[in-house]
Amino acid sequence: MGTIELKAGERLDDLQRNGYKIIQDPEKFCFGMDAVLLSGFASAPENGKVLDLGTGTGIIPILMAAKTKAASLTGLEIQEESAEMAGRSVLLNDLQDRITIVQGDIKEAGQLFDAASFDVVTSNPPYMIGGHGLKNPDGPKAIARHEVLCDLEDVVKAAARLLKSGGKFYMVHRPFRLSEIMVLMHQYKVEPKRMQLVYPFADKEPTMVLIEGARGGRPRLTVEKPLIIYESPGKYTPEIYDIYGY
Image (cartoon, one colour):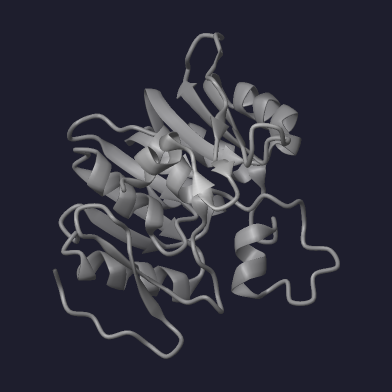
């Protein structure tokens, strides 16, 4: 485990996996359950190459490094501060031989990386459409949550270009965008293959959707059983404890 100094406002969080930790700044942006659930839903082949689009603090590559035997994991992040923070977390966990953080724009991913060069692409992109009415559209939280610097089509288009034939795309998003997600994935030939809806409680509406697509795959979608987060207020279901690794 490397030794890294924290900057003002930053904190160190234990990820409960392999002893890994992550640097975060609550004033800017902290990863949420959606990132953890995506890492639980996704998989990667042994010695495979993985790319995370919009990696933020680097949470998904770090969790995927703990879970899989992928040889190479790359996180692409447009915000300089987030990319720098993610890079320090990689060093802190001595993962620099497996994880690379690249500062860059998802819309330019096709120029930053070779076409058809990744086995897996993951993304936890901004969910909310546009940035109209935001008090601070240039703020880190706004950029992470709203489609200010990239939109859903940019993410799917980049994944399609960078995935090998048969490569897998994994994304977490909001159910209200589901029809748009399906149309775009089909349009860019990343065929939806597996889907799971995530519910806060069994009797509530779903708040997240996890989706897997295959580059050039044939149309056939498997809908998995619902994933319920809480048994009762403050108490996770066994499935969630299992994903979190407790």
